[in-house]
Length: 325
Image 1 (tube, helix red, strand yellow):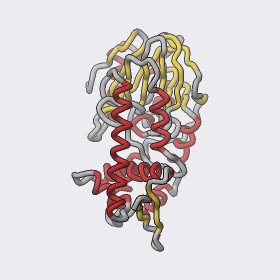
Image 2 (tube, rainbow, N blue to C red):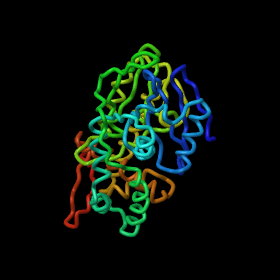
Image 3 (cartoon, rainbow, N blue to C red):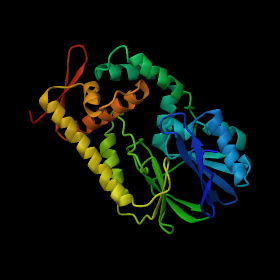
Image 4 (cartoon, rainbow, N blue to C red):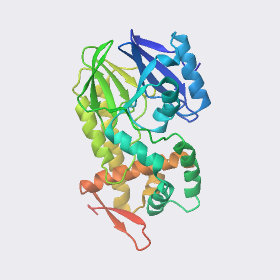
């Protein structure tokens, strides 16, 4: 067992499931609602993850049929991968935000997704030989996406009745377009998904027509004043101190933007070149893709605020320059 289930409070459990990555686990949560239990996020679609979930349920004395509702904070593969199997086995209802439903359906149905990724990476200056290696990793991840229609949508500001009292839904886009947190004012507790994590900053990746980093900053500012004693994150351990964490995380992204500005002030750079400027160690193809899209999200944020500009060459290559140079 990766980590024994933790009873946070009567009616609320943390279940930790394995991931086959450098980040080796994801936290899911069981929240008592009425006569059944809501499972918050489902883990990656692997046999190890499923077996661990069943074992942890057995440890706390619950059959898998006790899950009567599945709530997705967001639709990244490590949070959504087992949803279809669990829906089939339990008959549970499924709830998520509209933005996340749209993203999930797009990922599941888009046959041209590899072409879109290839086009984005080519424009960003990724060498032709590296692109297929990145796509191979994405092909495996894509197996976690099913076009599942929820039974109901989560709405920002709505309140869920639970055994612990009311939980307010707070939409916190940034890490994902329709990410949801669950906040109990009475318990001063937040189930934060990947919006606030313990030891790491969430990946903020570029998406077409989105200002992901700007959305993330606004979402952090929204939860900053809340009275929160306990954060239950999607990765890491239960912790306290959301306000210092938010201050440090915003400073981290400001520093990253300044590093980018300095690089493109010296000479025009592609996003791929900026990955090399910002990460001292070589990155595996899987991680290079995340780093690249994080750089693109920062460039999008800076372009919208008139800090950098993008020149598109005849071959489609994007060169980024500072507006101060």
